[in-house]
Image: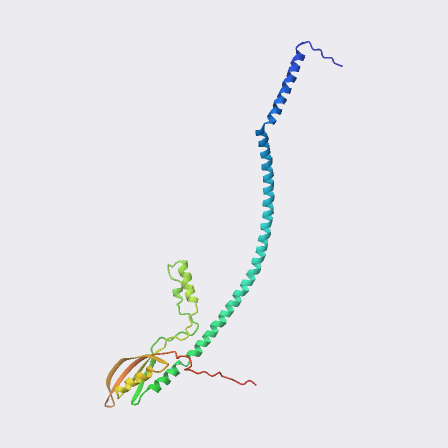
Length: 254
């Protein structure tokens, strides 16, 4: 057992003064805690933490909703992509059928053009007039469905992407002409100049012939006689509805 003896009389007093100093400091701190600015700062921190928590919760919920909508949109996009692909396929098949029908209709409408021209020219030919030459003057049209744009022009040299795309679209477009232009030349001879005038007038009155013009006329000797040799240019005209009558072909099937 150890005993401590205080040999300094003022030591106890100093200890009490130190204790009183510490109590004063504590009272000062308590006074500072009651400061309104410090309380406001602490309240602001609390409010900020609460706001951050609420915002985080709201953003998490919104992110979950967005992900759900995105997944639903991806599923819908996949389903609609299949539907659009099937629709494009059906549209291409429909366009192909329409194009084939147009080709068949074009061939059917133009296969009797020359028959009508020969019939009308023969009907308009007056007496004492005969023909020596009859030929087509316009360029022979391509078969129906053939592109009229050359392949070389589809890739212009030095052109940009837009020009190349436009050229490809022009080359790929359907160029079926339902009634391509048809011009012809008639060379004949007559012994009467009035017969030539009558021939031209009767040809012009035909519903299948138009733009009859005289390009050349001269006197030639045939078998010792003077005759007038002429050259006419004309074009085929699409007749109005009702002129040509068509009858469906009915084939009995047993």
